[in-house]
Image 1 (tube, rainbow, N blue to C red):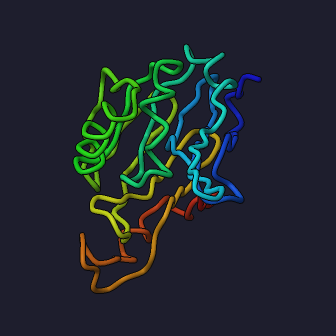
Image 2 (spheres, rainbow, N blue to C red):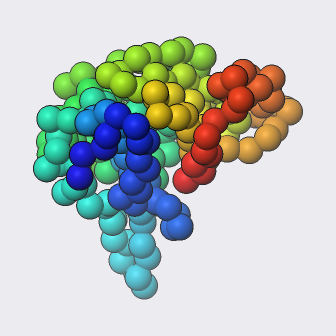
Length: 194
């Protein structure tokens, strides 16, 4: 499956319809963009088992994977990356706090720390192949949480990840709806909330 120039594909490999294991792909122009790479904790009696999303689809196409974008530092969004990154080997893009948490937790997971982590502050924009990304600050229970505005020639998506509308959060900036009014001239073509 190769995404064409006139289509914007959304392929969830984990996280949609469940809590945990967030791993979403966006495809356009023959390329892929991954958003988040998390784990899920399953408790069975006294045992806790960690579940990972299945990355085999994108691992088989990793030469077309332009990057892995992490929306925030919670385990269900970053926890699988140290274990799955050796199969993916794509640059990682995230905010300062999320990068710090990833760097601290990766060694303890027995996995690998990504070779390239690029820091992107809330409000930053970046062009990755046919994808134009903008990190939009959003309120959540961890610093530097961002929604993503993903634009392509075939359309745009607002990917919210986890969020809440909070005018007085304990951590981070207050939710500012004015930031989202500027998302595309006519708004996004779709909204994805994982």
